[in-house]
Length: 293
Image 1 (cartoon, rainbow, N blue to C red):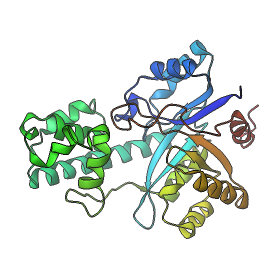
Image 2 (cartoon, rainbow, N blue to C red):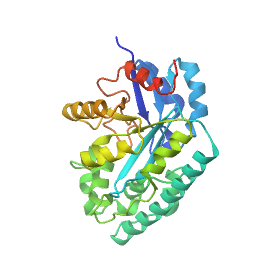
Image 3 (tube, rainbow, N blue to C red):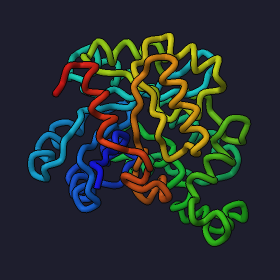
Image 4 (cartoon, helix red, strand yellow):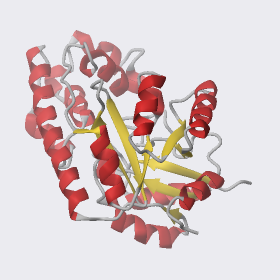
C-alpha cells in the first residue's frame, strides 16, 4: 500500500475546525496516513501541539498555515505555507488578518439582523472560542438561537433537503456575493501573503485553485512567486486535477494534495485523507524546494 499524505487539514485552532491536534493525529494514524500538515486559517498556534503529536503517533508533520488573501479581482485566494518558521513579521501579519476577521464578523451579524434573524453577538464570540470568527460561528448562531427556530426561511435547513450540509447552503444563499447578508471580505493582498510565507522560510502553495477566476488570473498568481499548486483537492473533478497537473508542469510548480478537512460541523462531506492520488512522492518533491531529506 502506497504511503499517503494530507497537506490541508484544519484543527480547532481554526475556529471552524472540530478536532484538537491530538485527535487529528490519532485519526490520521487509524486511516494510515504517513504525513500530514495542519494548516489552520491565519494561525500557527497548532505547531507546538503538532510537534509533540507527531512523535507520539509516528506520523511525519509539516508545519503549515493557510493565509487568507484578497486578489486583485476581489476574490479570496488562500495561500498555504509549508515548513514555515515562527517570526515577528509572520505573527504581526496573522494578527492583522485576525483584526480584519473581527470587523467582517460584526458587519455580517449586523446584516443578518437587518434581514430579520436574531443574533446574539456574545454567543458568536463564545462559539469562536474568542478567536476571530469565521462564517461558521456566525451561521451556528443563526441555527442555534431559539428565536430563529420557527423562521420559515430556515425550515429546509433544519428538516428539509438542505439539512445534511446546512452551513454550506446557508453560506451560498445568504453570505456569498450578491446574497442578502453579503459583506465584502477584507484581508492582505495575495502578493503580501506569498511574500510573508517566503520571509518565514516557507513554501507558498496556492490552495484549491478551482476558485481562481480563470487561467489568466491563475497565471498572474503563478507569476507572484508561488512555488506549488494544490492540484489534488476535495473540490476538484478528475478533469480539473488533470488540468492543474498540466498547469503545474508548464509553470514549474510542485503539486500538493489536501482534503481541506475541518470535521463534521462546517464541512461534513470532506473526509481526512479523502482524496485520490495523495501519494507521498508529492511530499518528496515539496521537500526538494528547501533541501529537506
